[in-house]
Image (cartoon, rainbow, N blue to C red; front, side, top):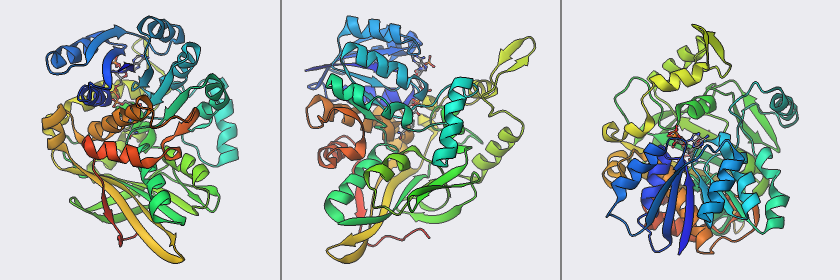
Length: 419
Ligand code: NDP
């Protein structure tokens, strides 16, 4: 019997909400709130008569803490799920603290305006101190730890697939398969084809900012940064086949390095097709990925926002995307005095996701873990107060829930390693 406020109604939220509605005995009441209320109403309408969950909708601008506070006060949820954008993480966390409610999100904080001089000062200091230059990092949300602990509340950060399930895989490997983990390679393969020359599978702005940033990995206690897309490997993915993958900076490396400190090397690879890379490079070279406003015909526009308006909405890719995703982690280390390696991953079929919830597999593999993370908090399986990432909790009930609700894992004890 729980009331949940879900903020955001895009590609990922659509899946998370549909999956919550499959577990009505826990998610008895949901309020879908977003900037564009029409999208919430449309989703609520499509779920009418198909779930026992009672659904209401609301309009909220989550950039404004006071609006979120007013909504929480009137709806009185047990949990707020932030499935809007990383830009809203801090304002929603502030509202949760003010109202005494638990919090969950799927991506760590980054500012919308990267030219803000206040933010830039802190960012540049962090780049120098830590050694990576991505716009996002955990420091902003980890700064809330004491406040959440003191309030007896939980903030669960980054509960999608990667970040999210990949960290549960790390916790699982640590708990069941290794005494000591030496290396972790996170491999994210999308073997799907949507038929467009160029489109992103989740929010284009957030996606392109992430992918065009310099790559980096954790090695012997420090970050090693490399030019974007400069480390490439080929890997033969189960159920997908051979794909080129590139080393990226990714947020979970930062928290895994803290929570599995013995790991000497942690890397993240993502597959990209040549067409995607060529388009991205060209757009970057002409300035279309810039977040700095320019004047155009007498009005101010932000190039990357304009580009977002031109690109296909990721939420519409479902019917035309075919193929599979394969996302998981390869570990090397020791168990009972012997060296060993281990691979745990999920394979997800775009068209099967579409048939079940009307979305492609990227939204599905993010929305299902968000629902399962909420389930862990609402059913008292994960109770540790404070601000935490997924690998800090017991992975077993979470992986069990993922298995049950559509994201089973596969394992290999002798995987091909990445050099
Ligand atoms: P979309 O752009 O499809 O949806 C974002 C939603 O948030 C929209 O409904 C949008 O409203 C709403 N929104 C934006 N700003 C505000 C605001 N100020 N107040 C209220 N609502 C707002 O994004 P996705 O569904 O693709 O992604 C959602 C999140 O999931 C992102 O944070 C993304 O980084 C994360 N993600 C995480 C992954 C993981 O594995 N961990 C993988 C993929 C995504 P409107 O309709 O008005 O635009």
